[in-house]
Amino acid sequence: MNNILKVEFYDDFSCIADGCSFTCCQGWEIIVDIDTYNKWKSDEMKFGYILKNIKTKKVNNEIQYFIKMGQKMHCPFLDKKGLCDIVIKCGEECLSNACSLFPRLENVFGNLKECSLSCACPTVVDLINNIDGKLKLTFEGDEKLWDDISIEYRIREVMINTLQNSEFSLNDSILIIFNMLLFIKREPAITEDIINNFKDKKYLLLLIDSWSEIELDNEDSCNEINELFIDIVLNYKKVKSFSEYLKDISYLAEDGEVGRSHIEWNDFKKVFAQYDKLIENCIVSKVFGNCISDNIDDSIKSFQVVITEYIMVKYSAFLRWLINEKKEIYFHDIQDYIVIYSRIIEHNTDGIIEFWKDNFDEAIWEVGYMFLLIN
Image (cartoon, rainbow, N blue to C red):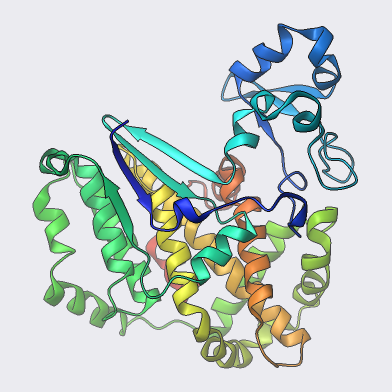
């Protein structure tokens, strides 16, 4: 495909294989695409040992194939040296798409291919952290393509531009975007005029000013985030690849005292500000890779996933800061939590959407809940 839009660091990525401290072969389900499964099935003499470790699951009324992970969510094909047994015995061409592409994300829309990288890989977070300034997108192809681009692209363009607008705080940018998406959802048709309203500086400043009249209790906010954290890590804190990062902070969250730490929460946010550039660029990368759809509900849910990850990274760093007696917040901790929540949340969107439905009766939040989370 001749038209390619990608994040600026896409071509800089190189897997470090057994040199990685956070293997992508452990801690989550690994899906096998139907073409790869059929390839393995067609030669059971060669691939029989692989097929013995494949399970099926019904997802949205479709049969999907997954690798049977061990008790510690460990891929059975990962050897003691951290290398892939399938690659060693059969070659990279025999890997499933998920394994051969990760952390690369590719989406094709008509004549345009978009390429990004998942923050579920620590090397990707390193690349983002090394960006000087704002994350850029690079385009290769026919510039005339943009003359007739769909409205969904306009929406995402406003989302990214708002996040990167230095006149707004990150939290204000998030609220602007969420208000825009909810506004679009309520309208019978999406028009350029609606989108242009959320590009207008005067309108946005009035919108931000109106939020100052909303009274939110910091303790309520801290308690809500704490409860969300407990719910999200419940099934992961005992998983081997996550436990060393989540177990002690989850104990702290569960002891009932954190809700009274809202003063410390405010102090922490000032210290955490040193990572604003990294967090912003991670969010922009995630919005680029995930938040485009001709269904506005899907765009809203994708954005909620991104913001949930952001809140969990920030709150986990807060708990770690408390454990470390309010000393330095280290990059490696932030990096670890970005990777962990990308794996727990971004790569389990069906699960998180069901969680929202169970807790709120529907998957799309009310704006007040977003206020509470990022207060």
